[in-house]
Each structure stands twice: as C-alpha cells, then as structure tokens.
Length: 106
Length: 122
Image 1 (cartoon, each protein chain N blue to C red):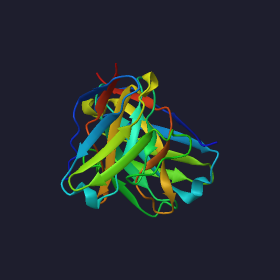
Image 2 (tube, one colour):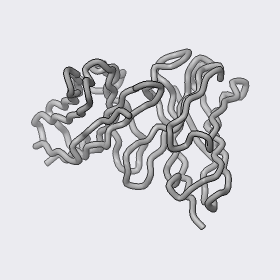
Image 3 (cartoon, rainbow over the protein chains, first blue to last red):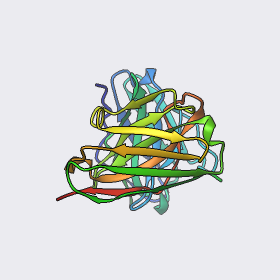
C-alpha cells in the first residue's frame, strides 16, 4: 500500500518561512492536499491539488509537488500557524494520510 | 455556510455496535460524496469510508472493511456510519467530511465536522 512520510516535527522563527515536506514514491504524479489541525479542533484544508488555496486561507500558504516530495510552505510564520500539518493523497480506491508534522513557531 | 454536526459517539464494549450520524446543512447534500475520517488519541488522521453523492458506490479503509457500513439519507441530509464488532483500536474521534467535488468525489476534504468520540472499552 502507498505510504506518505512526514517528519515528526519542525520549527520556524516568528516571521520566517516554514517548510513541511511529504515524501512518497513518485508523489509528483498524484494530487496532494494539506490540512492544518490545532489542538482540540477539527482539521482545516489549507492546500488542495498541490497548489490551490481554499478561500479564506492566507496567501502565505503555498504548495508544490514534484518527484518524490510534496512541500507545504508557510511564509512570514505567525504564532497562529503553530499546529499539526497532514498531507493526503488518493491512491487506488483509498485515501492515504501522512503521519503529520508538528510545527512549532519560536 | 457549510455545517456538519456529528452525533452518536460514546462508550461501548468490545464486540458491540454503534451508529454515528452526521447532519449536513448549508450546501446541496445530494450533490457531494461524503466521508468518515477518524483520529485515535494522539495519532494521525485515518480515512474510514466514502459514499458517492447518490449512494451508488462505497469504499472502506482496510481496517474497517467488513465491520463498518457507510450510508446516507439524502431526503434528510444525513450521513451514517454503522460500526459493528467494535475493537479497542477503533477508539477515536470520528469526523464526517464533505468531498471537494460533486458527484463521485475527488477524495479530498473541504469541510469537516467537529467530531464525535467513540471509546471502545470494557
């Protein structure tokens, strides 16, 4: 079965750029979606189909996908961006989530 | 605006059954595929099941196949999850989620409910 690999944790200084990665075999051939989840809350979609932002998501959030790695980039990180981030793809009639990355804003 | 409200969670003994509901509003329910996604305490998200807009097709994650059944009542804008033969490892918050695309779905999740906690314990 298909697997998505995310680093357990990442950190970014306030105002700097955060990068969250999602690895998978030839993931560049799939559509990747990203979700933000704050403690005790439901997930919120922040990027869909690799690069698209839903309405209401700041332009500071962007995505890319190529080769074996998809990337979520958060520019000018704010304290409110501290959360768990999950990548997700659809593969052969099933949905696969990454293990999640806990982003800390310092 | 889109609202999804889950109900039916609680504490249940191993081997027993539970039925979750998700009341939908703010969008044309019968035009969208709907999903259940769960999250065990401190763990990652796990997809559980999908049902197409008209109920004509369903799919399940491997860990629940044969035990859980997803269904919908488009006349009542409600999604269901019938969970049988429950195990301790089914303990999780269960979210219903709307698909990002109409019809047979695109298998990503634009809107989520707040979730309902299911605890399987003797």
